[in-house]
Image (cartoon, rainbow, N blue to C red; front, side, top):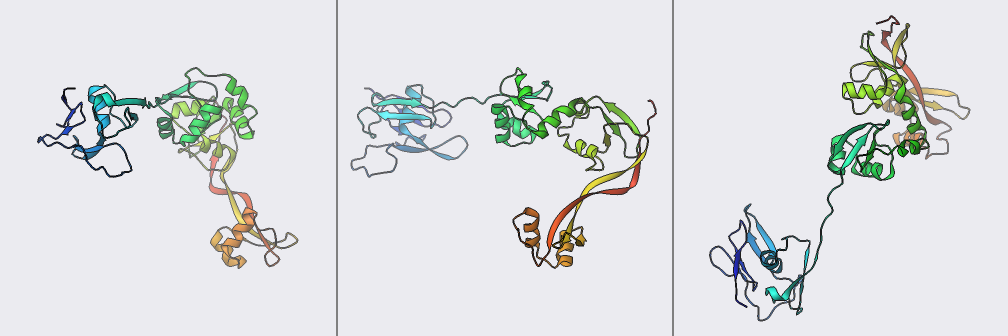
Length: 317
């Protein structure tokens, strides 16, 4: 067989159908070895200076198949030698066993809890990056039909109505999220002036561009003073109410449950209770079942009202 050379694109190196590699200066990089040493990789390799100015190692058998056999130059190509001699790099001795192909990424489609399409993404990775969620959470939502950040995700552009029926029995949090879709939400300024009303939480997200409505729900439940610079409520009121926030304090109790001392901060609890922080954490986490010096520590939740009031009028707009 006559030896024919072909140039490797954008490198200046030439490779022949006999397995010889010639550098741009004319130096032959591959020569037959009379006494080959045992090596970890049985395939002969050549280090080439590629276009980006870096040295890269190529298996010569792959270079020959790429230039003379139209095989892609990638590590996914597995090369076999017909005479089981890896030093015989002639084209007639090389055979492609398998070309490993990767599957293209699946597109992800985002829907709200009413089935309305919101957005589409090229892949699960892109969706997780744009939404701000974990890749595994988006993938699980697509495969199992679960919620992720109060959204539904599918691999198909057509919404499956059976997902809404399936979500009805998924737990209290999901059922409450479905029930709150149709509730009217009122928006107030921090001064207490009514600004406008929305037919549902989905309308609030669409108009204001809010991705996560959990902070709005916390304001409605009284766990936050405001969210996104506004005060939110589910009904119009004509009485003065104060901003209330859900707080907790540390309470020291004896064997009978009598309150001995209270502290708002953990550092204060250490001093007042004369107890190590690790012991307090054990009481709060439930890992300590016995009393410590005939006392125990519990966490008590309560509403703390701010000084600033808010007036919600019931006058027609």
